[in-house]
Picture 1: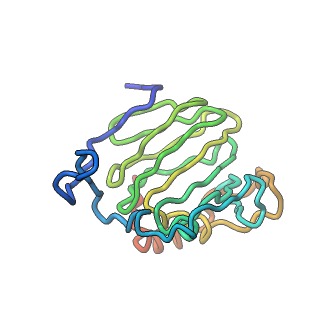
Picture 2: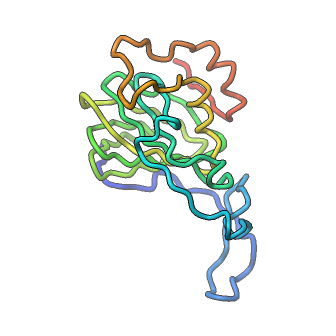
Length: 200
């Protein structure tokens, strides 16, 4: 079944960490392996700004230009936010994240996501939630695309830094650049990132 609207794709396991919140009656919940919340941050540490044209925070990875709008260092491990611009062919093979959830928000182009047993067509304005421990992949269907990727908690953005190269300009990498040129090294590094490739 192909779906084009925003959906929650799987029930997400949560556990209560306190009985009732004395202020508003809501239950407090946390996810397995959660990092300390923003409530533990020093108020003077809030706030930062980084524009999308931040060459110092951009890499070329698998035929795409990725700009790190926020990293775990900026957010005290809460999340990483990446803008990625790419072309047809910069697809992601089937894989599973065991540490973080991902949210993709499509700004331009069309991207077909496979999540578990579902297929979702992402068009501009579509948000796709990819929960941890669920296999997924995506295929770029348009000539070019632009999307935001939110990973929570933070940490996986370091994968793109490790396997990308610093972008020399805010442009796409050359079209003839090989996709996933370091497959063996990626397979060896995957366990360090809680990443599992689902090989055919």
